[in-house]
Image (cartoon, rainbow, N blue to C red; front, side, top):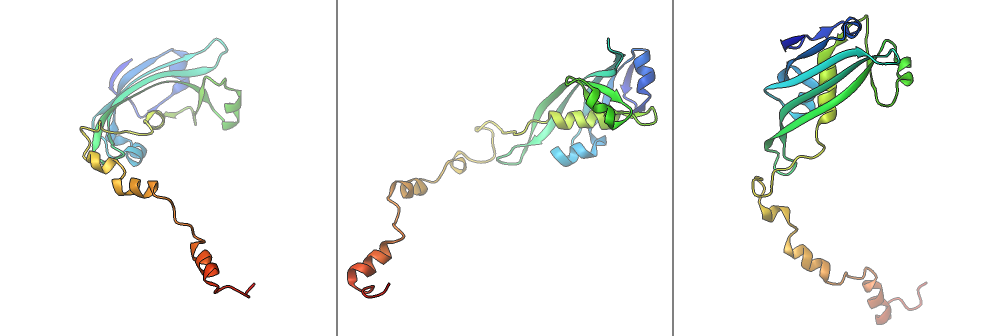
Length: 182
């Protein structure tokens, strides 16, 4: 079933029984937790979800998503465009205790009252797909190359021998100021 905008809630067990395919868009500005993690976003996330039942009778969702996000550079904090995509395999469970029965290849997704909040699932997958660190190329970064390198004074200080913290005691001892004190 091809839709331009994915529905926010679905009945996944019925979709799995009919081996339905949902394909469509999710507006990135409708995902508040993504905005907390990566800042306000514009545009859409392309999503493909295939509902089905595997050979062991488990209801599952095979999915793929792709979006272009504006993520802040860790050096200058100016956003840069970053493509994010994810392929995922979800196992539907009706109780959190059943999550342990899923194979390691499946991520559990909790279906409550035979309803699944697709926006939450897609938002979770997008957040998990975010790169840990994003940088501009050094030539495009708003932080200059001089700001990225250690100061030359610091390098000179490192090459000079460190001052001995006990030098004062040594001077006192040699001057005789500490004689007779123990």
